[in-house]
Image (cartoon, rainbow, N blue to C red; front, side, top):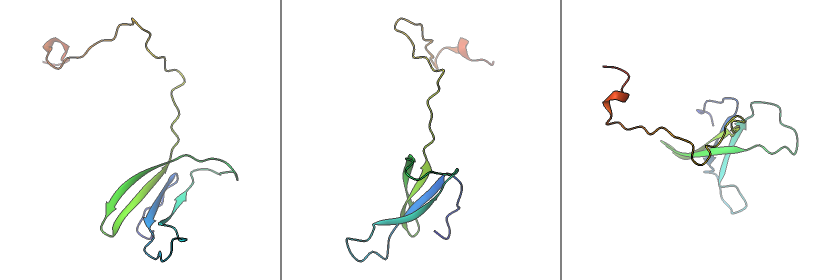
Length: 94
């Protein structure tokens, strides 16, 4: 993890190239929390596979997604404006 930039809320897992037995982990790495985490608290993570010059790694981020509490699902029959890239009158410039 020497060349990995450490930032709050981010982390990385690398392939464990020192793995000799099935009891050892396939991946190793770390995560820098962006806040204090209590023992037993569940922390959601998101991960992305990324190829590198030394092999594949998994990039991690703390998943802090919160749905918009003000979002209202459109009701049936509500009018939704359709966009067409072929209607010149909708282009805001000449």
